[in-house]
Image (cartoon, rainbow, N blue to C red; front, top):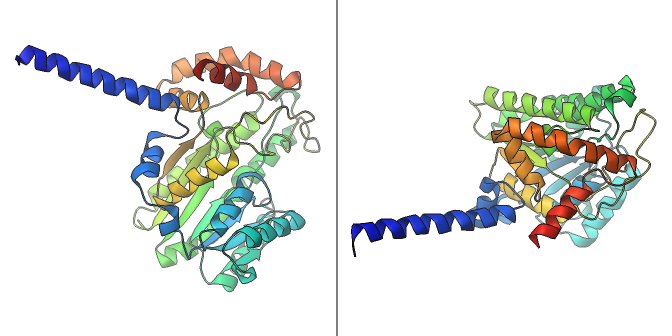
Length: 339
């Protein structure tokens, strides 16, 4: 065998490996580090047992599903949101399908915009369970309205709820974690914290703010390596987030949420979140294609990403104004071409 043949075989092998990785990426629903952790990393069933986990926004969507999956891992749960009756419903289902007893779940009503209540809520958790191992900052709302049509109060509400409320609660919990020199702070951000899209200006702004704040916080906590800051960026996930999104006025919500069935299953999103927590991942992207690809473009090829976003922006607005989900057509076209 000549050296020339060896080189040709090596080049062919490298090309085949590249093609395999490309095919895997086209079917991926998470960033490469996350998928590696799912394949080779630590299991949530091993790492999260016996922890005290506080979940905000636990009455629906990702927070609700997170409560259900955590309840099967033997953790102590603190469930927070504004709607007490919905939290009670989630607690009942956790007890029916999980491995917990009533004493293992604390219902703690919480309004993130009422920042004066956060210190008392933190003390209530510590009094009940003695520690907080994981704080999952999941509470928040989305937005569907054009900038020129949107009352300024909508922007204020989104910053108050999504950003300042999350920062406030984190600052209340952080001294306890610093004292113990350990803990996990999980921020359920959004791909909107990386990508900027029309109809969600206030929401994108609040999520970009969270990304900046918690990246700074991580760098300030380097002398406490046991405290992990994990920014998680889900793409479109099946939930009521669009139905509950703010519209042009604070008193209005979206009239036509459109078809949501194309979105990632909430159970899959939460499973990947638990894997991220178990493996102490610090930056996590969770989305099906083509949304994951868009995130990579915004991260590594922003000029091209801006051009694509501007081209697709009109379609997104037209979809929304015609009563469809803003992003459904992109996903359906992608699915048709790749199935």
